[in-house]
Length: 164
Picture 1 (tube, rainbow, N blue to C red):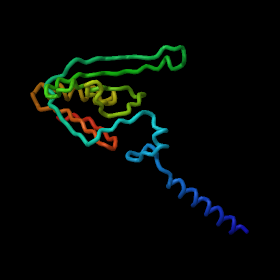
Picture 2 (cartoon, one colour):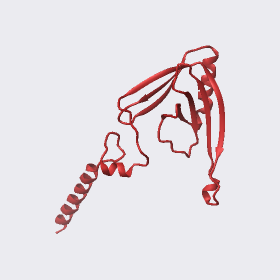
Picture 3 (cartoon, rainbow, N blue to C red):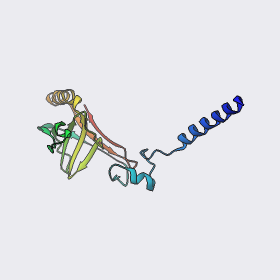
Picture 4 (cartoon, rainbow, N blue to C red):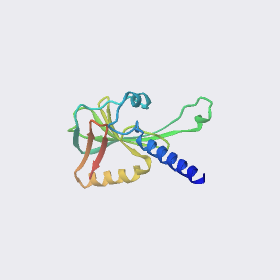
């Protein structure tokens, strides 16, 4: 009798683990079903073809430090968002302007790089601000070539790169 229960228990555990592995991850890139689209946190706009472009940075633009919150009387009123934006002078980027946007540790940014209203933004955690800014200043001071590169793929992959 004990062996039968152990056999039933073993089969149940095996079946459950196999069923769990067979589930489709709705957040996996490239897997888009109707159910997956309904569970997405934001509307995805993908390019029709893979793109990768780069532009030379000739100087640093204006740096903006921003602190914000929503004061609505709730406990979240005490949560502040901190952002630092460094403008980049990129004469070859004809579509608008480029910027590096540094965000706080508590923020969740949906893209690593994005173009909105002609502004190319590359997002970095706030912890990297000092290091990246000093590297940029040093490279530009000695007239070393600095590139900003953006890659967008049809499967949703986004990448913003600074090349020193």
